[in-house]
Structure formats: structure tokens, C-alpha cells
Amino acid sequence: METLDLYPHVDVLAALDSSQPAQEKLRLIHTAVKRVVPTIHRMAVALHDEQTLTLRTFVSSGDVTPLARYETALANAPGLVEMLNVGRPRVVNNLDLFKAGMAQHTRWVGANYAASYTVAVRAGDALVAFLFFNADRADVFTEPVLQTLDVYAHLGGAVLREHLQTMRTLAAVVRIIHALVHERDPETGAHLDRMARYAQLIARDLADRGLYALEDEYIDQIFTFAPLHDVGKIAIPDRVLLKPAGLTDEERALMKTHAARGKDILTQVIAHLRLQDFPAATVLRNIAAYHHEKMDGTGYPDGLPGAVIPLEARIVAVADVYDALTNARHYKPAWSPQEAAATLRRMAGNALDLQCVESLLAHPEAVAEIARTFTDGRSTPPA
Image (cartoon, rainbow, N blue to C red; front, side, top):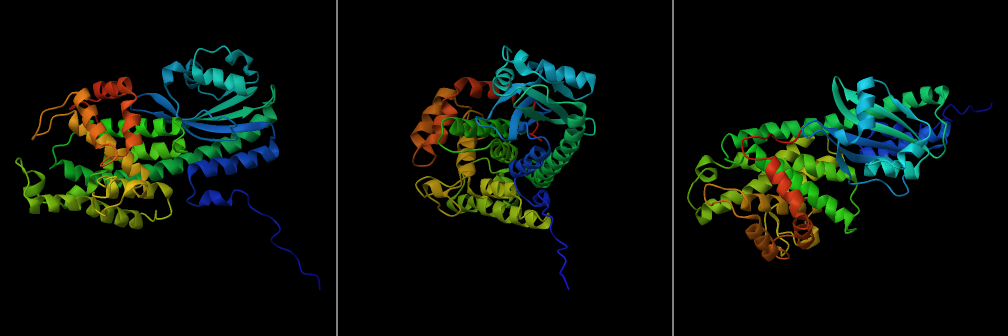
């Protein structure tokens, strides 16, 4: 009797149900798209930041020379603004008109692709992102092709919303714990905003200089989780956390336990949310656990040296120290940017990562703009 093969089909999208990074999931969808529309050589997502009304590159698939680590105001993309006002997807079957565009992203798309289909991704009334399909030849977006792409656009949007919701759920749970810390700790929401953006700036510069191959998704994780670095302070008693004068050796040792306690708290949170396999959870845990490690191995909690310290923790350490120096605390006045920069340079190589320090100090205008935008008493942590 002939044996029937009941399982001949391989589901190429099965990994969408896994905890793979969003980048890998977009590549899976792109592979499926190319099977039915081979001319689609690029899929990409740009996230919308509701707080700053900016767009930033997030994930892409198929780019030979990707547009990465790029951010611009939504207002600088009038075509996308018009698309939102019309309330329908945008079809551009000939991108020649983009080659002379004013914005960098417009010229880049016009120079590298021949046609474009753009869909807005929403969560309720909120704009989440834009999803782009780019083709290598003009006039490919016929109505039958668009109907096919709409299916994949909604699939991509659902995957993106799920990913961002998981990130936000993880961040929200930790932020609730963190808020309890800030009921006692004098750090402001503006401090968290500033250091998150300093960390983002450092990560982008490290990638721009070719020192690390950092994808936008990873940089976005650092931006999202940097404000949660001190979650372990919830375990520090008020008599130490709020002490206005200098700490004794015993109190200082107790204060230092906040990094290890933060790691323990986050390990439990991640386990309860069943996110042990979610890559971003590791980034969050590393930031909380290791942002007080030092390059010479004298930091805490584990005395990790140099490159053994996770990169995300090294980045956040520089951002946190710089903001602490340039803003007043109960034990010190605010230092000038020049004084803070000089101190960072002295700390580089021993306490702080030299390349991370150089990446921050290489952009004094961007640093100053962040400081001006997010002043104490005006801001909230990034969502």
C-alpha cells in the first residue's frame, strides 16, 4: 500500500509565531512577498514618535545600501502628511520625481528604486509607523498587485503592532515599578528623557563610524529601555536613597546593590510575562544590571571588564553620567557642558567606554538641543 505524504507543505511564515526580532520577521514577510511579486526589492518600516512627531528608521529588508539610523520630522515628509490627510495608501509608480527631492530620504528612495507603495500602520487612531514596498521597475503597482500587497501590509502591520505592544508591555510593567522609585527618588522625568536620547545618539554614532553593526531595532531598544536603568532602587531603603549628606561605607555598599536587585526584579518580570526568548528583554536586563560596571573591572555588581560589559550597558552608563553631571542634584550644582565633557574624557578608558564617550561628545549641538528640549518639570519618559 502506497504511503501518502500528508505533510508536503512548508509554512515559510511559521517563524512569525516565534520570538525572533522584528527585523527577521520582516525578512520572512518580504520573502513571501517576492514569491508573488518578484519586483518588490525592498520592504521597510519607519516608526512614528508621537512625543516628538518624528519618523525614524526601524527595520528593513532587501536594501543593498540601507537607509539606516535616520530620523526626520514628519513635517519634512509632506508626501506622507498628504497621504495621512487623504486617508488612503500612496502609490507612486514612477519615482523619477523623487530624485530631485529636498529631503535626504526622498532623494535616497528616488535614486535606488523605481516605484513605491506606502501604507500607514495604525493602532486605533494613533499613527504607529509607515510600511514601504519599493520596486526595481516602474509601473508595477497595478490594482491586482496592490490587492495582493494589501494582505501582506496588514500582516506586516499586525506583526509590528504585536512587537511594539510587547515592548511597551514590558516597559510599562517595569515603569510602574520605576514610578514607585521616583516617588522617593528625586530624579525627574526629564532626566530619563534626556539620557534615553543621549544613549540613542551614542548608539547611532557608534554604528555610523562602523565600530559596531547596530541595527535600528537594537538602537530603538536602547532608547526605550535606557530610562529604566535604576529600577533596582526600589529595593533601597529611604534612609539611604534619600539621605541628603554623604553616605557611609556601609550605606554606599547597600546603594550599590540596586544593580543586582534590578537584574533580579527584571528576571522575575520577564519570566512572569513569558518573554524569556524575547531578544529585547535581554537588552533591558543588561542595562539595569550592568550600567555601573567599569572598563577596568572595578565596577559592580559583577566586576566585568571592558568588552565583557554588554554594549547597551556601556552606552547607558555614559548617557547617565553626562546627564547627572550637567544637572543639579541635592549634593551638587549643575556643571557646564565643557566641565562635564572634560570629566568624561578623564573617565574614558578606565570607568567609561572610550568610544561611547567620543560618540556623545562628537555631537555637541545635538546634545545641547536635547538638553534644551527636555528640561526638568516639562517632560515625561519616552513611551
